[in-house]
Image 1 (cartoon, rainbow, N blue to C red):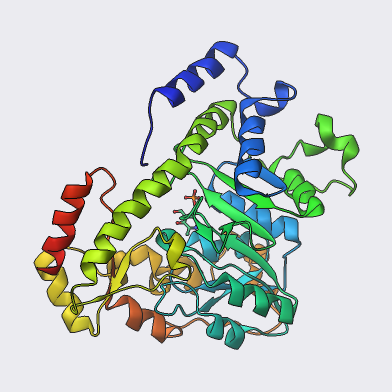
Image 2: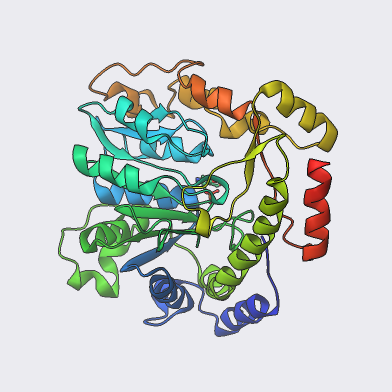
Length: 378
Ligand SMILES: Cc1ncc(COP(=O)(O)O)c(C=O)c1O
């Protein structure tokens, strides 16, 4: 959470006073619908659907794209576990691919992991660092694969003139408390494809076939779940969206100050961004784990390998291929045996063992940011 204030409080009060909390009871033009329209306009995308989390957004996007049992989905070995679990929720299985030194999925390893059963790729834009989307979309086109961008950690960040999340066939955002904009818990699916949008509407709302828009939907409704959000969340997100570009600009300005100062050291390198002009996230990488450890000791900044839950080796329920019910286990429906091992993505472990995320000091004035960066290279 970077900013939250009076505008959000006033918006919530408006919803509370209206006594209209559900988006589909208030007719047209509710808070959630307005947020979605504004998101589409800002991100230059045809459709946006608000859901109750980033995890729900990923699952909804995969379901809407028709990913299902027997399909393999390529995901990075370094991400929040939800990116890897989302395929399981639609009956597919994840196949982990290495990252490269951009801290995002390595397009070369995506190609190596493609089998005749691969249906989709989930590139993840970790800590506001953009994946190499040009290369990924080229691979997807060549192999006729679908792409669901996990932009949960990068809402609003641009890549070569487009907002992350709007380049693949679908994109997923998280609005949980730690994200660029937040409503506590929330998410959104975006797409330019009308059919995918209609299918995401169906999946996210068990009552979709009863809603006002139902008569205009072209495909028969299938049963969905409930990922709907309340108008309270829609109202907060509407105000947060107005702040988004300002938040990103402030992060970028502080990042640039730090990167310019870091240019004066040979202790570490700033992780290369796939679109430097729009870079927001800031990771650093050392020549060796030994140098990274010495830096860690001095400055008390954890290594990425220590981020635990973001590293595939710690995803025990997935690595053990468990399910809530044996007959619903997607690993029973694969078209080849899927084997997970602790060392299946060695490059990822090696890279993470000598790199760190530098949290950009958002709340600091520029003078203090400079001092903070200088201290890190002293
Ligand atoms: C990369 C990534 N994907 C997906 C998610 C899931 O988002 P949520 O926590 O809103 O379900 C997160 C959340 O931390 C994330 O960081």
